[in-house]
Image (cartoon, rainbow, N blue to C red; front, side, top):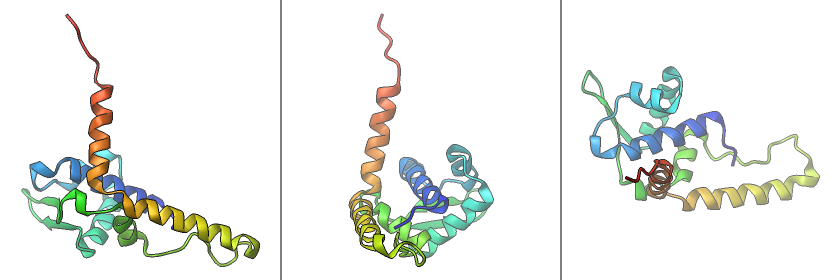
Length: 138
């Protein structure tokens, strides 16, 4: 499995939505700004995620995007497959002598992304942020 810029943007956008889940619908402009993703490109990414059933959306001034399921029920692998397809890391034209190695690497990556959920990523992000905050003692 290869992770392109599109895949990385999809993961960043889904994590952003998972972190903001309690707020309801999140405008695309906010996601794009917080995650430093070009809005036009983000529109395409979010459309792929919506088609895969991972997001819902509402148009208009009060519109935005929202996860369709709990973050604990969405894996990184599901998001990557929604935007990347099921491409293997080994591509035609690569060294045949290394084909088994590339396949093994691809399978290992797939196992990790299929195990990690956005619930876990939210917990990690919140933990990291809490450790990064300065402690003031009086």
